[in-house]
Image (cartoon, rainbow, N blue to C red; front, side, top):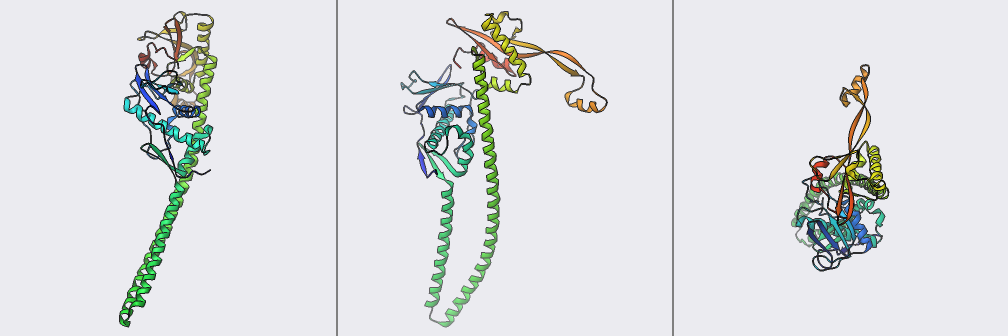
Length: 400
């Protein structure tokens, strides 16, 4: 199905659309919408930079408090069971870590809801399917312009613009033909032979000059067509690259989702301080299998053997923090007196002296939080964690 020039009405900030409120626990955004619309919002939140459709948005600025390594992350997306501060009962709500300021929150969320409204419309029109949005974005951007203006989104076909250009060329051609006919009529209307001869000579001179201009124009046109052909080839290659990149982004989303499902299934009683950061840093760590084994042991000791983290031998209290402990493990490693980038050279010179040593490596951070008789164990992982955890000592008791 082909999209004609259409107008889409996006969800807007207010009683009938969505509402933002800032609290000491984070930024909350409540909104109306179907379950499909909520699922689209969730996809955008998981990977916002992959969903740029509008011509007027080169890149959406995600402005959060970045003092301690905070990154874009929403903490929850669920059905709403309470009224927002404006007294309206919305269908869903999003909980974020804090936006930098009110304007930043409005700007990002308006872009997100406009994008979701547009995508939902494209799904309703059967242009794309909900499980293949990212893969189709490069194709959509090649075929259409998506322009957000005031309270509407305008969809324009790029083919219509091409047809419009052809129409302009046809009008110019018709004008030239009409001008030629006018000249011929004027020649016949001249009575005196000498005046007619002078006019004919002037016209012939103009025709000769016009012929030279036509040749020059044809050369320019041919060069222009060659450049257009090259540009189209580059565009096609770019679209193919974007499609491939979109596929990789989707695979990354699925991989992140499967990692989260794994942790939820295997370690259901552990809670994250920052889920995305935890999964990202762990997946990149070269000793991730060792770290998982440590987590298994911790889980067994805490939830099966009912031991307190204060009494576990493989945990140490983190200096400078009140609530956090850190796990350690030892690993046998090959050590040389050379830097890693110099080993290859020394191998050519007769080998490298090395020895096997046991090194103690840092692993997960863990803390226990008690509130009104309820207990939760939070875990964290990653570089520069101790500085980061100073703002979460202890973490706020909340649902992830």
